[in-house]
Each structure stands twice: as C-alpha cells, then as structure tokens.
Length: 410
Image (cartoon, rainbow, N blue to C red; front, side, top):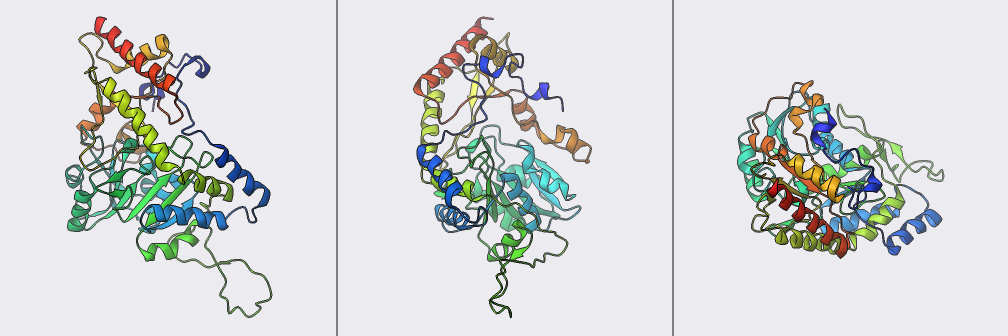
C-alpha cells in the first residue's frame, strides 16, 4: 500500500513544527499511576503472572458484570487467542468489517479463513445486523464486530441474528472500553470480547497490553495455558511434594500450539490504577468532543459520526466526513490547509482492508462495500486527546472553522 494515499498529514513538516501534532500518547499518567509502576519495580516477585495480574483481571471483570477476564500482551494477541479458541480452520467463513484496523482481520486470515467483508452504516460508521446479514451464509463460523472510534454497534440486533443463523460473535472493543449500549458495557453482549491498551488508546498500559473476556467457562479453563506456553499448576498430590515445582507444561487443544502472550506485573499495576479513573477519562473526552462538534454544527462540510439512541461514545478518535465545497471538493485540501497554515496534523485512517496488498494477495479482495469506499475517500481524523487543555481545544476549534471558511472562499 502506498502510505501517501492513506495518510495525508503535511508530511514535509516535522512533528515539532505542529502546534497540535498527531500524538502517539493517548493519556497522561498521574503521580498515582507512576507510583503504582515504581512499587512493582521495587517490590514485586514475580514480575509476571503474579498478584497484580490477578487483581487487574478481577477489577476488569467486575467492571464488566463478572465476565471471565484474562490480561494479555496486546489487543492483537487477544484477537489471536479468540481465533484459536473458536478453532478457526482453513476455509471457515468469517465476516469482518472492511473499515477497521488490520489487526481485526489478520488473526483469521493467518489461519486461512475466507473473510467476507461487511460494509458500514454511512451514519454510524460501524456494521449493523443488516450489513452483516448480507454477508452470512450457511458456512459462516463467526462475525467480528468492531466498535470503531468508540461507538458500539447495535448488539441486540446482531446477537438476535447470531442466534438465528448460529454463528459466534467476537466483539473488537479496542477503541470502545467504557462505552455502553442499552445499559451494558462494550463487550458484554457477544461470546468473546477483545480489548486493547495500546499507546494511543483511552487508557494504555505503558504502550502495549490487552484483555480477552467471555462468559463461557469452557474458554476460561483453556485460556491460561493458551496464553502462557501451556503452563498449568502441578497437582497437589504430586509424590515429591517437598520439591518446589511451579508449573507443568500440560496443554491440549487439538491442532493448536500455545503462545506466550503474557503481560508484565508493572503493566497490570498501571492497569489497576487506570481502571479507577476510566469513567472520568472517558467523560472528559466525551465532553470535549461534544463541545467541539456542537460548536462546528454550522460547518455543514463536516459530518461527524452519529450516535444511535441507547448508546454512549468514548471518542477514542474524532473523525468526520468532509462533504467539500464547490471548488475545494477533496478532503486533502482541508488536511493540507490545517497542516501548513494552522499547524494542525489531521490524518486519514483505515484503508479498506480489501484494498491492502496483504489481503489482495491472499485472495481476499472481493467486496461490495460502497459506504466503506465513500467514507474512506472523504474522511479525516482530527488530533484529539484526553490531556488537551481548554486552550488546545479552542485552538483546534478555531483552526478547523477558519480552514473551512477559507475553503469556502477558494
């Protein structure tokens, strides 16, 4: 893929030249967060697979109404484990949104699945039961539902369809931790849910980290060994009980070798601290996003993601479709103006996956996703972070408004 086609960011400018650059840091850590990590560095033994892992998992489980929760090294690792748990095999059909990050699809393509690309709703920009149903056949084994940008897909309707057509639902909640749909947290509806604590997410465990959750004890019995090299405790009745033996490599899923997708104790301690203020972080992002969107409501050139009744949004990203003007029809004009005149670095995201050479070469280029194509060709994402001050928010707002006004006069 030619990156210049999918990320138009004022590439000739250095990051330090932007007033509002596109940052790789989604959250600023507090002294409480830092102290939690330092305490582990000084005192924890072991430094992985210890008490902080157990506490982090328990807190995350409690936040999601008691699901089984297992912390892992990344959101991608969680999706890899999901693919292994449901035993994806060569030729299995998997429905996946075409408009998402590549990690949503790679674990399934890696196993030789036939991916059927689902289109997005033009207003909500996530998949719906209708767009999924157009892709489902008698051979569909699972559907990956991505709650993109921080907005939940309509899960009640999707789960009704899953029951009717007998397929597994995997929720990709990498961007929607803390969002809700009809009173339930993101990830609480499907059979399996995967979360990310990557550097740019609303909370991040030192750059990488993830969680996989489910309601089935069948999966919970298998996951610890699958996550960590097949390790299980030795039986208590072991004959030489006086010899310390921590673990036994004893794992068996037919045709599946275990992984090492473990996460460190320092990351888990940080996760514990961050979960205590997750709702506060999300509310600050939500309040700032709504302020910006409301104040730009007269800029009809920009169309922001709509929120269906009964849903909340975490605003992990702040994206919009640019409808253009009579002369400045291309969203690249807006991106370049923001970059070079106002030093605001907006980007274009989520190249339709069926256009990627990676998937094209795998024979996965076939798709009927007109809304995905149209949105990608006209969208941009603005820099937007929980640590933005009121001054930064005001500068972002005024820059966007002034750029739009200039393009109207062009």
